[in-house]
Length: 466
Image 1 (tube, rainbow, N blue to C red):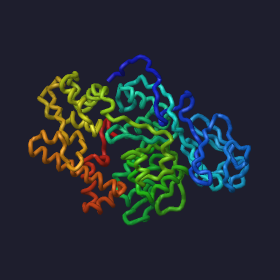
Image 2: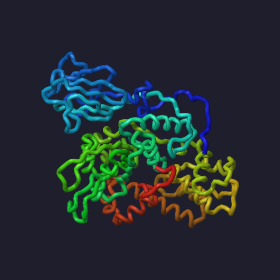
Image 3: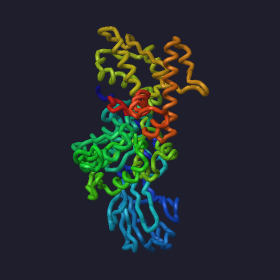
Image 4: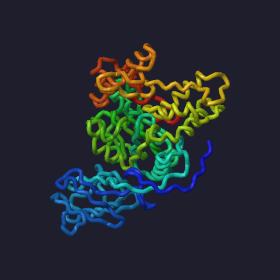
């Protein structure tokens, strides 16, 4: 598939997860007090030194008695912040590391006295010019929404800052993480993916941090965790909000200190990784319901990129259909818009690109031998595949009522399963062990059902999925 040439696009307005208006600045950063007597204080940083302390002459005046009069100097340097301790009495820390002078990435949390300060990206919208390309890595799209995403992905790839990917299931979050890695200076290193929702809770800590032989029953040999495995490369933590809460402080320490301790060991091991993360649902919702710690969210969401749903970029359908058909063996079929495409455009695509691929695979499988025209494909789009939400008080949808009895019954049963399991997951904070006990199913059976309804990621995803 060749790139579609296009004229220069106008500059588009994006949100805070995009990029700064200056070419050399990726993000605008503010020092935000998240713990201490001055909780809530926000001060924007500049590319010239700003002092912090309890002296009235300081740029940022703190009332914390454990802070020195002139405690710290902060300077915005591109997408990072230079910290210089001004010979303070109690020191300046990032995690457990005391700093004299250092450049730290946006998203870091620094401690001065009894005050913790988050170096967070601003909420004001910033400007970025959409990409002129119709793909980035294995993500495809010609719509303005996707070309904006490509521009952001391109810019963050060249940095070391942490990225939080947001978007509905099937929009391509894992592909975006892979594209970031492949376009970064770490592309020659490993890309390691950990689906936090697909690992049994009792095994997540070992998978993440590694273990020593004999650390627990079944630990027959030493094993490196994903942080060590990703050393020199990129680590993608998917379904981060499924990570047990008791492990999230440990993850935060590793992110801040860049060192891990295997289970059963006391010595730390340095790790050099670039972090990309994604949540199964809205990160804000995960924080509100207590599934994701606020400080961990702040630390990882230095740059947040939202992948648009397919129904919000229907102009990309012809390109996506052509690309997907070529990938699944339908490269001889000529894609021409017509009645078939009208059906595609009217479909809600709750499963996004993953659902589109499934529809095309099924249609290609049932197509006549040697089919060459797109209108020869049977693009049957059932209410179940549409992921239609049930109306209040019933699992029946208007579309189901138009089906034959048996198909309508099957669709209603599966819609009930999906909503029942969705509610059970939310009630138990997306913890599979708790949910399995709550609903009376084995964890294996529960995970199988959740994957069937795409409420958690499958072990292996195909192209254009996330």
